[in-house]
Amino acid sequence: DDLLYELKESKAKTVICSYRRLDRINEIKDKVKIQNLIYTPVAIFPDYALPDMEKIPDAYLLTDLIEKNEPNPPAVTINAKEDLALLPFTGGTTGVPKGTMLTHFNITSNIKQSIQWFLNPLKSSVRGKSASLICVPVYHAYGLWAVHASVSWGLRMILVDARDIDQIASIIKKKRPFSVYGVPTHYMELLKTDIRKMPILYISGAAALPPSVAETFEKKTGVPMTEGYGMTETSPLTHINISAISKVTRFMAEVKRSIGVPVPDTEVKLIDIETGEEAAI
Image 1 (spheres, helix red, strand yellow):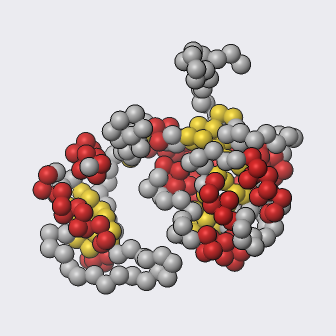
Image 2 (image 1 turned 90 degrees about the vertical axis):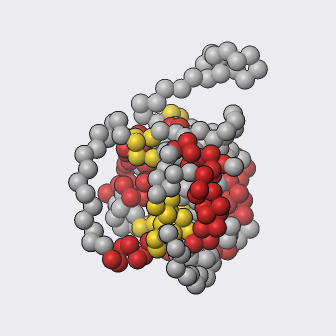
Image 3 (image 1 turned 30 degrees about the horizontal axis):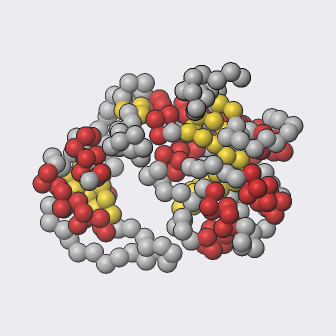
């Protein structure tokens, strides 16, 4: 069981989960050393109704903790380059999931390498003035990066049910966010809606974006799409297609469909998948 394995490997002492996941946690909590269990009400998409909840013994309701305690966290000295901020687990493509040790410096550096680099020409006109629509789960490396990127520019974050394409299209139309973070499937489905031409930056990740989808989407919306590549281990972004947004940033004159170029201070090596040898450029 992945959850049990991850709790054991991380040596987690506190679990924060939704009310709907309590039964799953209770099934395994005696097998691990959990000291605190905190549960929270979760809005049920798409009507945002909160579920009725009863008090759970040996567990804390997050809203109660917030209401009953003063916001006075203890002073903690952090070594940003050495101390872990997150321990996300990979998808386990080479076996069991592996905990990825990310420091505070890893995370903040990656934001500076990415959105604060390739969108820097737009910073003064956007920072603190717009919103981002995050269509991917924020527990995924891509979704969490979108959260951090949004915070770094003071953007209001709009979270949505990733499966509700009609709602996503409606939010785009009504709210006109500065940026939209999605996966290729989102954009394939959005093409079937009456999405209009608006000055919005559409970013795709988590899977390869078919060039035909990007080109058709750009024709329909009138704005360029971009995609990137990364891994949980790299916190996560390593490449971004800056050519795809060259109409906005003027970084490049020609659009080239690919994962793009390495972000600053990133080293890459090309490998021939047939021979396993380093490939020539």
